[in-house]
Length: 97
Image (cartoon, rainbow, N blue to C red; front, top):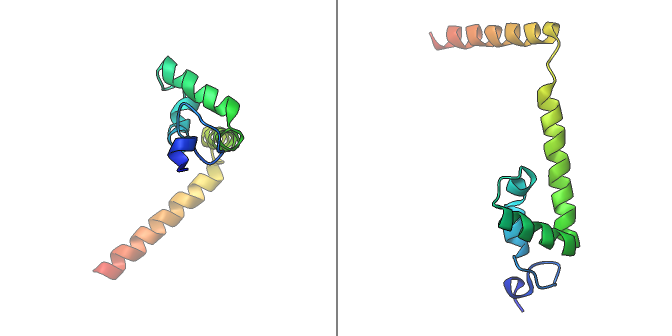
């Protein structure tokens, strides 16, 4: 039996193949799917342990990235980074002339 006929790696038949669900999990997390698609994917996740674990991992990573992106670097660090960028730019400019 092929994965598409069994629904995917979990071996249970589903309305959607596991690969298709996992391809769309970020859209699901962001509520960017039509209501019917949201319901089908939620139903799949409710029945499929491996997909649910992958979904939880993706959701956790997305939350960590979102939290990290909202923080600002200290001003002294920003100044050091900008100074280093300028130094490298000068070095590159000098070596290309």
